[in-house]
View 1 (tube, rainbow, N blue to C red):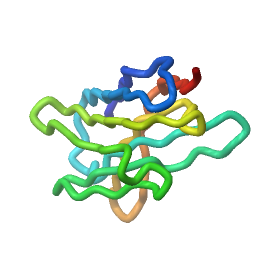
View 2: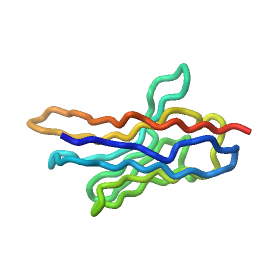
View 3: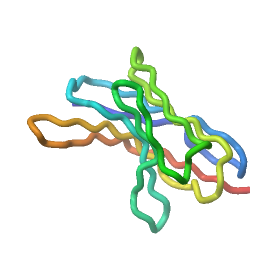
Length: 119
């Protein structure tokens, strides 16, 4: 079992920056991907960025060049550095851990942290 706890959300003005952190506790050797998703009001949850166990990353086109995902494997922390924030980035951001065991995919989710971009 893995528990994920996010922090770092808040209110920021357009153009500002925030860094989200996700601390993973517990153990699951089948976890191969860590990522950040978000859900804006009235919209479906969408992938923001993710990182695999080898350090390779990918991100949504809407955040490329502005958001960076990174990890500290020794401390089991995943970060999302968000720069040049826009009002449309307003959402609840969720940390995700994705695994596969015996051909079955599964996910762990954090409780979410609110990010509000507004002047």
